[in-house]
Amino acid sequence: MRRRWELCKGLGLPATAQNKVALFITNKPAEQRNTDMKKILLPVLAALALGACQTIPTNNDVFATNHTVSLPQTEAEFLKRTAHLQQAAKGQSVKEIIYFDENFDLSETPVDKGYFRKSYGLQSNGLYLAQDFFADGRKQTDLFYVTNANYPDSAHARGHLSIYNDQGKLSSVQYVISDSRYSRIDFCKNGELCAEQHFTENTEKEALYLNGKKIDEWLVTRKSTGTESSRKLWYPNGKQAYYGLTTVDYEEGQDSKEEYWLEDGTSTGDKKPDSEAFRSLENTIVDIERQAYDRQPMETTDENSETAN
View 1 (tube, rainbow, N blue to C red):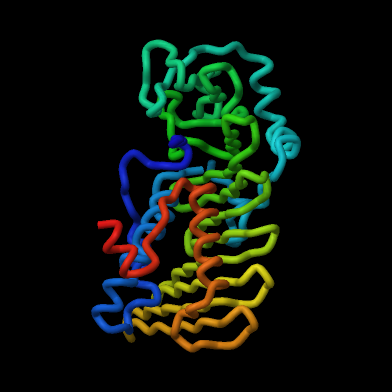
View 2 (cartoon, rainbow, N blue to C red):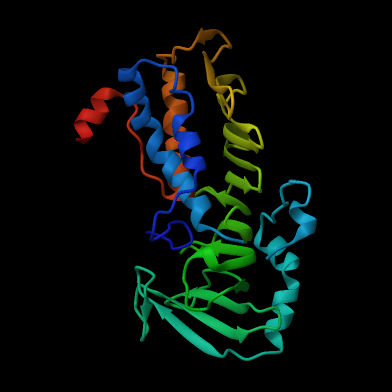
């Protein structure tokens, strides 16, 4: 099921999308660059779309030094962190109930497979206090602030936001300041933390986890002189599987390097390992991204690409 909190209706990508798509493929032959572009483009665009469509209230204490905000990882922790929202709602009545259909479009009446929002109206801080529910009354979020009560996507949330799946389990926690400054963590079907994103004014960081261990990490750092983009992969045993780095200097140009390793730590240089362990790692990453972000699987071979076409 497509959740409005996970996907934008309009795909507006920031300029950094180009940096991520170009990562690790610039110095390769044209034929290989075309193949690698197919492999990298889809998940990168999905990741950047998430960054473009999510927005979070200005809190200078949180991002003043580019540190990432620590997010609560349980419902109890979240409710404790947002006790002021619950207190605010107790002294107010619901001003409006807003209905959405299964595609998250506004509806004048309730929809069986849709959602509804209880709005407590405009608050003294200039934001609306609201809470979302599934059609049968189960909560989809806890109380949160939003810039416009009629907009269903997380681009208009401000501050802490929790999202629950239709089984009542916490699936995502976010803290939104703006479209370029936010943090979010996501939980997979087993309830464990499996993904996180932290975007500040000068950095973009994404990571995936398996059984509590980091297996994938993207990092983009922007400076006045250029950008630096890196990606690291790890096998479940903790051994590094991949490292790639692309440095862009606005005056000197671009430089890229990459290295792969086998599961036992043996380097294969810039050649991707033809091993079951590495293929399993790739498949695990695809599965986690699908669970956390609803991202679709990407082609990993030319044969798969031809079959898909």
